[in-house]
Every structure is written in structure tokens, then in C-alpha cells.
Image (cartoon, rainbow over all chains, first blue to last red):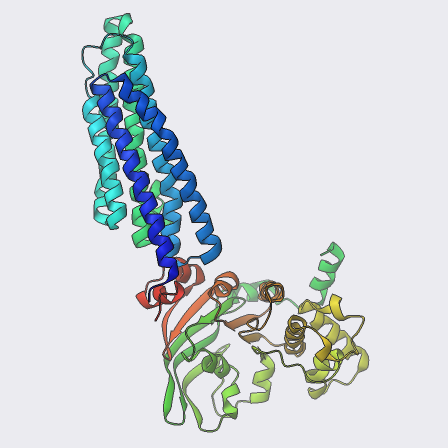
Amino acid sequence: MQRHFDKDIEELKDLLLRMGAMVEDSIMQSIRSLLERDTALAQEVISNDDRIDQMELEIDRRTLELIAKMQPTAVDLRFVATVMKVTPELERIADLAQDVCERVIELNREPPLKAMVAIPRLAQDAQGMVRAALDALVRRDVSLARSVITQDDSIDQQTEQSFRELLTYMLEDPRNISRAIRLTFIGKYFERMADGATNICEMVVYLVEGKMIKHAYGTAHNR
Amino acid sequence: MTTLEIMERISIDRPVPPQSEKEAKAGEAKISVRHFDFFYGSVKVLHGINLDIPDQQVTALIGPSGCGKTTFIRSINRMNDIIPEARAKGTITIDGRDIYAPGTDVVALRRRVGMVFQKSNPFPKSIFDNVAYGLRIGGLADKRSLREHVEKSLIRAALWDEVKDRLDDSALALSGGQQQRLCIARALAVDPEILLMDEPASALDPTATTKIEELIWELKANYTIVIVTHNMQQAARVSDRTAFFMLGRIVEYSDTKTIFMNPKEKMTEDYVTGRFG
């Protein structure tokens, strides 16, 4: 039976996907601004963040309205809970893209550091994880979600590796320090985007299977 | 509630069994249903029901109209006996004793297993006489003792404060919500162990409904409560366990939170989310 409620759920899903697309865009452009030293593009990402914040508010408003009016249960309840958890996660990822752009603008005031070592790959991988997390959410694909979660370790390793390499630049020449620190920050931002993607994937598992798997509490809480 | 009122309420409660006995019973099944079938003439309306209803908890029965919930709840105090051609097969045991065994004292059974119906049905008598009715039939004649029992029951049913100054007024002058709580007080007066409630709040406004639900919460400390409800949110709010009935069978029986957050059966999910049809 088709319910009026289904239309509200669909609309909420569409909004979440639009927000997801905007966040993906921000990540992509932040990477481009970094690799191409494009200050104008970085500024554009920063000014676009307002739209994403507005989207978050709109989704929050609709979610609360839906709970008040429809009192969702079972899979509907899990969907609404997922939206409420995923939306701020996306907003935070967009903020991180904005942070990347702020560091890019600062970096562009100085000549480029010889190499950015592991950061470009780290950035691409983190972007890929966010995209895959959103795909998993749209398709309610638990195996994709779980495979994204397993990638998080490799991201952590890459972040560590880029930090170690940047440290050598700093030891080599103190004039590198401010740029190397900014790049360290950037590496950390991408790592945290990947963390956000992992959190989204954990909610996908909850949405589909009703199991909470974060913090490895899964087994104790799902009896 | 003031501290004094709480203390009064505690002191008039039924005597608490020795701790060890109570602990042994905690979580134990008060009512055990096994392979229970029910027929109206040749029509089978309940099919092989198996259910353990725990003591001191609220168990909700949900399901679409005609799924057998009411027939089932009425089987627990043999209320269906009065219907000609009605027939039961299988067992329902309360504290390990089969209530359908030959020689069962049905009147005594119904004293142990009280019932509250959808539509409040006070007798056309005074508030006092409504609550005292079962006690008088049970042979209690001492006026003072009657008064004490009536007061105790009305306090337990959270109605005392609203009626204590007009116990001689007609019960029919009470509001719908008050009448329903009066019926609960009447059921509690004979000191039952189990309380069956067949949609006790479906004819009441939201405020009266909230009062009944709060009352159910308080009563479960001392009684085993089984409630039939069409209101999903009510089942979610008041019950500890929920059984979903469908076409005379139990589709799923689980913790209420599981039924409403993550049911195992697709059919349950469709029903609780309103996709059914």
C-alpha cells in the first residue's frame, strides 16, 4: 500500500542526496584548488559552504516534522535516524573541504613546497570513500558500506606516512615549517573526511540490518 | 505526588512475597500458552498459539481487526465459555496449572484474572457500589472492611482523589476516562493477579488515554498485564513485550523495542509501519 508518508520519505531522501552531491563537489574542488594552486576556486568553495549549511537546516526541519506528524517505526524509524546522523556528518565533511581551501589560500601566498608527497593520493582516496558511502546509502548496499569501512585503516596509514615525510622537510629546512604544517593539517582534514564516510557507512548497516556496529559495540548491543 | 501519598500507597499494596521467592519468579512466565486452538462452531479462529507471558510485565497484542487478539485475550479467563459452540484445544497454564483442565473453578479463575473492556461498563449504581460489587458477591459484608477495600482500589486505579468526596454519586455521572478507571478499580477490588485489557483507551481522549497508560505503568509492579490495542504508539509506549497476531496466528513475539525498531518478519514490519494492505 502506498502511503502519503512515502512521499515525505522520498523527498527527504532526495534532499539528502542533493546535499551529498554538493559535498562531493566541495571535496573535488578543494582537491583541484590544492593541486592547481587555484586561490579563486578555493574562495568559491568557502563561499558555497553556506548553501550546504542551509541544506542541513532544511533537512533537520523536515526530519523533525516527519517524526512529529508520522511517528515512524521499524525501517521508517531507522531511515529517519539515519538521515539525522548522516546530515551533520556531511555538513562536517563540507566544513573540512572548506578548511582545506583556507589552508590552500595561505599556501598560495608562498612558493610551492617541492612535493606534497602522499597528500594527493590521500585526498583522492578520501573523496572516493565519501562517494562510495553515499552510493551505499542510496542503494542500501551493505556490502559496499562494509568495504568502505575497511578502507579506513589504509587512510590512517597514508596520513601517518605523509606526516612523517613532511617532518623530514621541516627538519631539512626551517623555512619549510609553516608550509609543511599547513600540509599536515590538510592531510588530517582528508583523513577526517574518510572518518565521516566510515560513520555514514555504519549508519547504512544500521538502516538495512538494524545493527549498530560503531565503536565495535555491535555484538553486545544487538542481542 | 507527595511523599506521604507515596508511603500510603506503598503500605496499602499487597504484601510483598519474601525476596527469594520474588527473585525466583522475576521474569518467569506467569501465563504459558501451548498449541492453543480456538473454534467458533466449525470455524477455527486461533491456530496453534504458543506464548509465554511474563509476570509483572505488560504484554501487548497487536494485529488487524479479526486477527484473533480479542478471542485470545478472552481465552485467558475463559470469557469465551459463555459463547455457545465455542471450543478450545491445547493448554493455557497460569502458574503451571491448566485453566482448561476439567474441574477448574471458573469463577475463582476470573477473580484471579480481571478484565477491562474497550467501552467502560460501570453498573448503574453509585461509584462506591461499583467497586464494592465483586467484594460483596465474594461474601465481604463488613462495612469498614468494604470501605477500606474500595478506597484502596480507587487509589490504585488513580481515581481516588477525583471521587473521594462523591462516592455515593452515580458512576454514570463520571467522564469517560473516569468511568474506565472506575472499571479498572472494580477489577482490582477482588485482588486479581492478572489484568486483561481489551483496548482500554480506544474510546478516550488523549488526556484520559495518558492517565490510563500511566496507570498501566504503575500497575505492572504488582500485576501481569495483557493489553489488546489498535494503537501502535500505545503498544510501543506501555508494553515490555509485543505479540503480533495475523489471521489467528502469532507472526512474531518479541521485546517491544525489537518489534518497533527492527522486526524480524516482513509482515510485522509492514504492519507496524502502516504499509499493510
